[in-house]
Length: 479
Image (cartoon, rainbow, N blue to C red):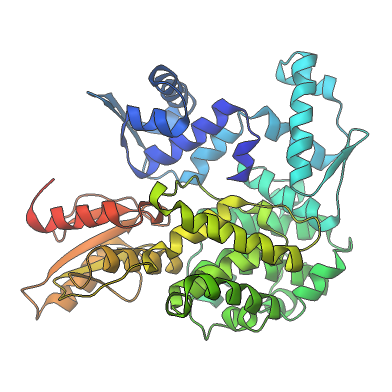
C-alpha cells in the first residue's frame, strides 16, 4: 500500500508479515528476510515482536528448520489483525489528530512518550504523507479540499479502525444500510469493503452539507446507485441529500467494482460510456492488442483501476503488498507509462497516486498473456468473494495448464458449496478430477482439510505458476 511507504519501517514490516502468515501460516525465514529487505535476525526479531503484539489471536507458533509457523485464530479477519498493527504507528495516530483539528506536536510527543525532536521529525513525515494524499499542513492544521479530506479520512480511519462519535452513534443503522446495499447488488462485501463504506458513511453523516469538488460531482452525476442512497435508504431516519448520495454512490462503486464484471452491469455500462475510460482502453489496446483487451477479465480489471483514478480516490485505496514476478516487470512498466500519460489529461488535478493499484491491475491481467489450448481433465471450483479475482485465478489456471484444467464459471462462497458443485458436475465424468481452489485474499473462510476434494490456496500474486504445481501435485498425490 502507498501508506506503507511513509510508515515507521518496523510497522510496515509487521503489516507484511501479518499478511504473509495470514495467507500461509508456514513461511521460509530466508524468503521473508529477502522480501522485507532485512537480515535473518531482524526478520526473526520482527516475528517475535508481531507475536507479542497479536498474542490474543495467535493459535500456534513453531520454529522449524529454516521455516517458522504462525497460525492466527480463524475467526479473526485480516483487517482486524492489521488494524492492531497500524495502531502501533505514531505517524497514523498523528495524521488522525490532523483530521480532527489543530495539532500540538509537543503535547502529542508527551502523550506518546516521544522526545520533542522525534515528534517533530515524525510531523515532517506526516506532512509528506498528507501532502501526497492531497492535503497541506499549515499552521498546525490540515488544509485540504473537502473531497481530499474525506479520502484521507477513509484511509486513515480504515487503517486504524477508528470510528468518530457520529459513526459510533449510528453504527447499527449504517450496518443495516450496507446490508441493504449488498442485497441490492446480489453479493457479499468483504470486511475491508464494509469498513471502507462505514468510514464513507460516517463522513457523509458528519460532514454533510460541506460542498464537494465540482469536478467530482460532474463526473459522478449519473452514476448508478445514486437513487438508492438518495431515495431508497436512510440511517436512523436520516436521509442523504443529493450531494452525499453522489459521494456514497461513488464510494460503493469503488468497493463493488471487483464483483460487477459483466459488461451488462449498470456500473460497467456507466464506465464504458465514459469518454475518458474509452481513451484509457484505447491506449491499453494499442499496447496489449485487441485479443487480450476485449476479454471480460481485462475490461473488468481496467474498470476498477479507472474508477479509483478518475474519482480521485487512488491514494485512498487500501491495497495489500503484492510482489510482481521479475520476469513480468516489463508489463508493469508499460502499464505505469500508459496510466501516467492518460492521467495527465483525465485524472483530477492534485489527485494522489497509488502505484499499488497498477500492480494489482497487472497481476489481474497477467494470465491473459501467452495462452494455449489442449484437452482438459481437472475441474477447479474457486472459493472467493471477489468475482474479479475468480476471473484472474481462472485465467491463470487455464494458461498454466492449458486445456488440462478448467475453472467453473462462477465463484463459490464456501468450501462446502464448492464441493457440492464439483460433485454435481463430475457425477457423470468419472475420468475428470475435482479440486477446490481457495483465494486467500477474498475467501470468506480459510483453507482446511476436507475428505471430498483436494484443496489448494492461491492468490493473484502467484500468477498461476505455484498454483499449477499445487494442482498437478494434488492430482498425482505429490507434495
